[in-house]
Length: 279
Ligand SMILES: *[C@@H]1O[C@H](CO)[C@@H](O)[C@H](O)[C@H]1NC(C)=O
Ligand SMILES: *[C@@H]1O[C@H](CO)[C@@H](O)[C@H](O)[C@H]1NC(C)=O
Ligand SMILES: *[C@@H]1O[C@H](CO)[C@@H](O)[C@H](O)[C@H]1NC(C)=O
Ligand SMILES: *[C@@H]1O[C@H](CO)[C@@H](O)[C@H](O)[C@H]1NC(C)=O
Ligand SMILES: *[C@@H]1O[C@H](CO)[C@@H](O)[C@H](O)[C@H]1NC(C)=O
Ligand SMILES: *[C@@H]1O[C@H](CO)[C@@H](O)[C@H](O)[C@H]1NC(C)=O
Image 1 (cartoon, helix red, strand yellow):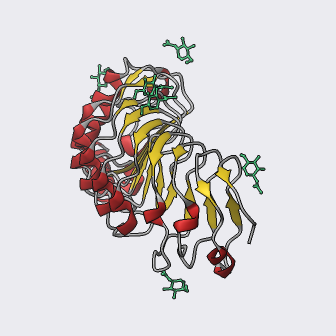
Image 2: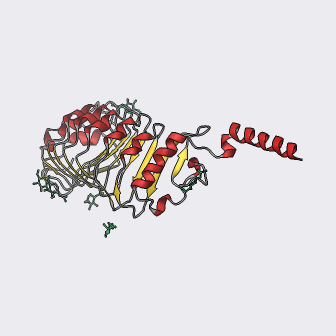
Image 3: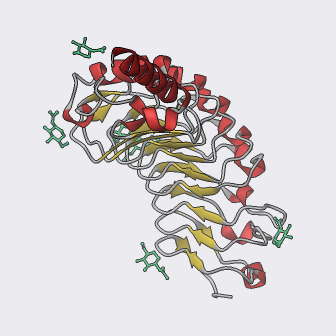
């Protein structure tokens, strides 16, 4: 009987160790990083399932990539979590999606360790209380497709280096306190992300964003302090579908070239200083 149980348990161990999908997956290095994130937030309730009674790929708010024990997705959404973003976030090298969203007591800035996340595609830090400037090191996250820093207290100027992000498809910087002008490098983004820069304190002339060969399709700059002569814009991006410039200080008149935009679904220039005839 003893030998039967020995054989059985040996087989079971073999089976479990070669079938990570059944045994529950957890990479030891990733587990260490996650535990340090948990203790950074003083073992807050969100992390209640993060214990050694289950594999870390099964913990609440954690996902691992298919057929792997590496953490690919980490999220904390709508929680009363208090504190700053922990620098040990950078110790999850296979992360593709990082979402800290709707955490009114998440404060501080974005840690530089985030640049170690070479596979990061989604960085969603919206609806928190983060502050300080956007660090220019974010431009080294070359796998980013969606960067969302909207609805925080970020301030300062938008770093020109963001335009070098090669596959970015959406840039959400709306509802912050960014000031200065939109970087001129944004006229030649490597990719052509949808630009959501509304509800900020941006000023200056942004007419450099408007030219026929620009591939951009969505530009939302409403509620800023932009000031330029719209009459001097001779053409708009040919494929633009959404252009919102309401609540700015734009003057001059609406150019006739607006009529050439066949795909335009929204064009809002209300609450500006425009005059003349509507084409
Ligand atoms: C699991 O964690 C508890 C409490 O932290 C600890 O006492 C115990 O030794 C751990 N067990 C294993 C198998 O690591
Ligand atoms: C969390 O934020 C809310 C709303 O901003 C605030 O009323 C509350 O005092 C904060 N709680 C803590 C523990 O800081
Ligand atoms: C925005 O930033 C300016 C400094 O650039 C500061 O004076 C102002 O209080 C900030 N506004 C908000 C709403 O945070
Ligand atoms: C906007 O920026 C200016 C400086 O350019 C600053 O004086 C002002 O406080 C800012 N406004 C708000 C509402 O933050
Ligand atoms: C506009 O869209 C068409 C059709 O999708 C595409 O062939 C063309 O390259 C686009 N033009 C620009 C400037 O992106
Ligand atoms: C344009 O923006 C203003 C201000 O937000 C809004 O009241 C209005 O309904 C918008 N117009 C259209 C056609 O969307």
